[in-house]
Amino acid sequence: MTDAFADPTTAPSEGVSVPSSPTPGETLQADVLVIGSGPIGATFARKLVDAKRKVVMVDAGSMQSPRPGEHLKNAFIYQRNIDLFVNVIKGHLQPLSVPTNKLPVPTLDPGAFSVDYGKFEGLDHNSQNPEQDPIKNLDGAAATYAVGGMATHWTCATPRHHPTIERYAGIPSDEWDQRYAEAEKLLGTHLHEFDDSIRNTVVRETLENEYSELKAPYQVQRLPLAVKRRDDNSEFVTWSGTDTVFGDLADGAHPDLFTLHPQWRCKRLIRKPDGKSIDYAEVEDLIHWKTYHIYAKAFVLAVGAILTPQVLVNSEIDKDLPALGKYLSEQPLAFCQIVLKQHIVDQIGDDPRFKEKVEKHRRQNPRDPVPIPVHDPEPQVWIPVSEGRPWHCQIHRDAFNYGALAPNVDSRLVVDLRWFGIVQQRPQSYVSFSKKYKDTTGMPQTTFNFEVSEQDREYHHMLMVDMCRAAGALGGFLPGSAPQFMPPGLPLHMHGTFRMGDDRATSVVDAYSRVHGIDNLYLGGNGILPTATASNPTLTCVGIALRAADRLIRELPPPDQP
Image (cartoon, rainbow, N blue to C red; front, side, top):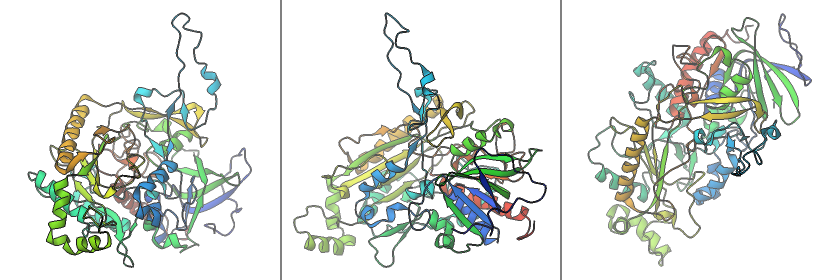
């Protein structure tokens, strides 16, 4: 790849000193350094390059596809059999905090088998964490180290957040509408890509009848998805990934303005002596084991709700940000799978809307008792958050790191139900980082202290009851997949850890995503959300990033000006 400037060994500008580094390194320069290549980092990069600014992007993960950050579910084999994609997701999730096993203590001699935690000094295997209280852990929390981040395997659900229950009031409502529309265009959000699906139609209509009391705009409806049905073969779709956000940058356009370095890990950000701005980032090339000092006019850190504060803590910036890592929230997830009722399936064969498809399927498969074509697109249905129903409902068939079907189960008859709840942000819930132990990547080990209030628990009980109502309308529970709450952290929607706000005591960034007290450091991602949410966060966070990028562009010097 081409560097963002011609000579990577060029010394930094006059008056800027380079502190000694334990590893011999080089210096790089750019207008903006973007750390993290997920949808948020890509949003900043796209906007900055469009404004003719030089951008260097680094990511600790490797390239997984020819186009950087492509959704891996676009592969032929996974569109043919979505359940095979489950193992791809599992392989991309690195656990964040795994409590170590404690040996049992005999009654007669309590000290005989006590655990010597000294042997865990420097432990970095699979994020095992002797400091983690298992009761307060987010067991399912994980990070994805790959170019594109979680967008290499996300569900692509892009709902707008509820205007009063979920959205941040510090951004005007008309600007929310503007940013949402811009974000939907950038991500490629569509509503009607599954309208030709028989299953999508019957599932949606069955739930519309069940929930007839829900009125627009919060009724049962099509799930907004970042996906496009292909023109060359309508049996397949293209799921949006970070490459969608990159646009022509994913095809190598503007090499003089944009450079992406995979497997380059940002260890820390170094402030200038007055502490009011970032001087450079210390970045390690994990393949060639070289250290770079990357100087820029501005820095964007967007590596997730947990890894972003990890970098800031490792940079000792947390000392000036009392809210960093606090107000941790995660959505509880209730999940089940149902098998469609027989009468719903039987009605498909008699429905004149589906006559042509059903007859063609029966001619080709005369012994198949199911009237649904083999490659009928999956259902994609949504019930939004609304007053009195502070939970987000997705009714579909997709791949997660759970819920895979056995090989002998006919997936045409199975529907997944996922109900996401709300946990209010409170300072008592937080993420911290060890001064003693390192994680697998060599950074300070993550430790969770996650708590849920009694009010939250009451809403979660109501959520579960509601999911069972929807399930009962559609069918019976698939054996082994009865209604259950999944391990905390499994939705991978953690938020609040570097929340937006005006008060430095309770927030980390201002309404334009700039870190309090540091004039050239911007943060992006789920951690920025300052209110509890139940809906998928990506669209909202992209909208916030678009707003921040516009402000950053206005504050940067004109192109080519020192």
